[in-house]
Every structure is written in C-alpha cells, then in structure tokens.
Image (cartoon, rainbow, N blue to C red; front, side, top):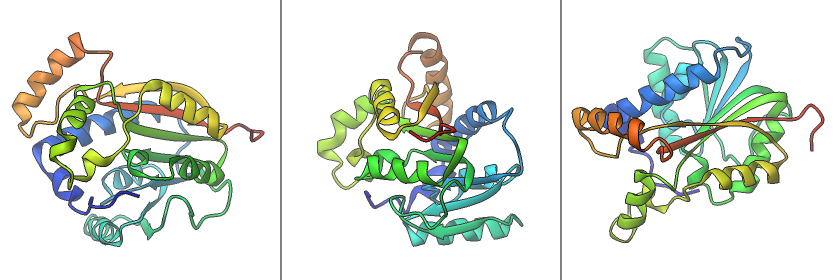
Amino acid sequence: MITGFESIDSWYEGPLGRLYLQRVIEKLNGLLNNKEKDVYALDAGCGAGHYTLHLAQSYKTIGVDKSEILISKATKKSNSQGRRVNFLAADLSSLPFRSNFFKLIICLNVIEFVSGRERAIRELKRVLAPDGVLLLGVCNKNSIWGLIKKIAKSFRKKDPFFKGYFFSRSDLIDLANQAGLELEQIREEIYFPPINNKRLALFSEKIGRKYLKRFPGLLIAYLKKPMVSK
C-alpha cells in the first residue's frame, strides 16, 4: 500500500477537505437511506476516522487502517466525541474478521493506493455478508482531478496522491466482475477542482455540475455480495 497519508487528517480540517467530506457524506446518506440500521459496518482504510464516526451514528462501526498513526488519531477523535468506535490497525489484504461478518462496508479513496487491489477486494468480499453492500469510492481518472494528477505527477513524486491508480467507470465494472460482486449502480460526486479556496471551489462546483456532469472527481460503486457467492 502507498504510504505517506499520515497528514490526511490535516487536509480534512482545511477548507477543501471539509467541503469534500461534506459532499461525500451527503452522497453516502442518500445511498444508505433505506438500509437496515444498527448492524455491523466496516470502514476499510478509515484514515483518521472521519467517515467512520459518521457511520457510527447509525451502525455498529469498526474502522481499520494500515497506519497505526492514523488509527491513534481516529481513536482520540472518537474518544473526544464520546463515541464507542473500535479502530484496528490491519492490512486490507488480511482482515482480522470472520467471513460474512459485515452487512455494510465502505472503502472511500483507498483502493486507488493499494498495490494488491484485486486481493484487497476479494478480502472485503470475504468479510461482507451475503446480500451485504460494499460502497467503493475511487478517484475518477476522467476528471479535473485525474488531469491534474497526470500533469503534475512528474513534479510531485513525494506526494502519495500522485502515486495512486485512478479508475474509470469501465475499470470499476471490470473490478466488480473479477471479484464476483454485483454492481447495482455508480454514483458521482465532487465537481470542484483541488483548490484550497472554498469560495472558488463552490463557484467551480456550480459550473462543473452544469457543464461537466460526466466528469466527476469521485465515482462510488454500489456493490452487493450475491446470496450465492460467485
């Protein structure tokens, strides 16, 4: 897995990160509106726990991340909010849970930075219950975020963001098919560029939603594990 994301908590505390978090949570709420509550949920690659703590409002949530530094930050954040959330340091390719345990798994902006993507998806499928839902969010290569990554990659070699593998819609479809997961839909979000100015980002977002609807920065695949595993 690509390392160097220990400062991601600071990014989410900034204006661009807060807006990104807000938009993704709004999309998650819509996707999960009719899902059964108070069941076990996993935030795979939870970072400092931003999405985990949101999930914990409705689900029995566990967060895992390979970085012990980020797990420590997530635990402190959870304790400061008075939330009972379990955070564990674990690799996505070898999760410490029994098979068919979780009814819901989210994995947002993580799989792009995992070297063994297929193996990690198979492991997520293993711990997902039959008919359970995996929400897999990935950066879209066909977006302004993907374009900037492509242009700046040679100049930002130490930035882990520029080392990841961004996905297209067809890439997501192929990944789902290879893993034997049912792809029900792909939802789209993030129509502002990676600029750390909220007013400019919001202005750009209005233009993006109107004229660049086909080129969102984030693709979220709604995947289900078949009742009879493929």
